[in-house]
Image 1 (tube, helix red, strand yellow):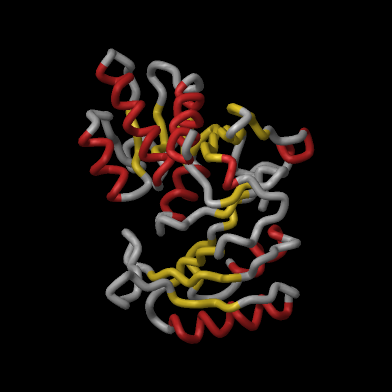
Image 2 (tube, rainbow, N blue to C red; image 1 turned 120 degrees about the horizontal axis):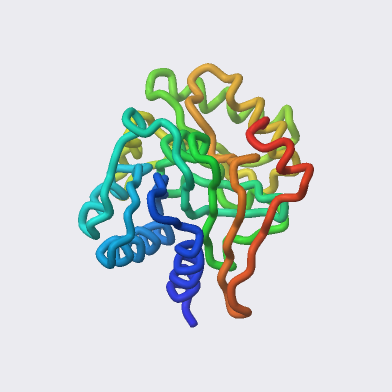
Length: 242
C-alpha cells in the first residue's frame, strides 16, 4: 500500500465518527482533502451535515464535492473537526500548518467539542520538531519578529534556523488571513508547552503550529492497519489549557 492508501484509510475511519446533523470543521491538507471527498460521497447518499472550511482551498474542495458549508459567524460552536497533522506525538500534541492554514485551523479546532486527527504513519513521532514549526506573523516588522523568535528559541534551548516561508517564485507565502509564515527548523522540541506559551507573548506573532490539548483522538493508518492515539485522563483534564 502507498502513503495515499494510508491517508484514505485514516479518512475512511474518521467517517465513522460523523453523525447526521453534525456541524463539522473541515481541515486543510492532503489527508483532510481525502476526507472532504469521502464526506461528499456520504452527503450525496443523504447524510445531513454542514461544514466550516479552514481555508479557501478547502472551501473550494467542499463546494466541488457538494458538502454544504456555513461560517463561524453563523455556527460559532461546532461538534467535530476532522483535520490532518504534520506531526503527532504520543501525548496527542501536534505540529500543524505545513499547508499554511494554522490560524484558521486552530480557531475551528478550538470552537469544536472534539477534534480528530487523521494521518499516515509517517506523521507519528516520539518527539515533535523534525517538521519545521510554522509561526504565522503579521507582515509589518516581520524581520524583527523573526529575530525575536530566533533569540527566544536560543533562550529556551531550542536550536535551529528560523526562515521566512517563500513560494516557488521566491515571494513570501501569504495566508488566507493576509499574514506571512516563519518556519522554525528546530529539529527537536523537548518542551512544546513552554515554547508555545513563549511564542504567543511576542508582538507580531499571530499564531503558531503547536496544537496542544486540542485533539481528542488521532487515527493513524500504516502497514499494520489503522491504530489510534487517545488522551490520558490527565491530558483530558488539561485540554485547551495550553
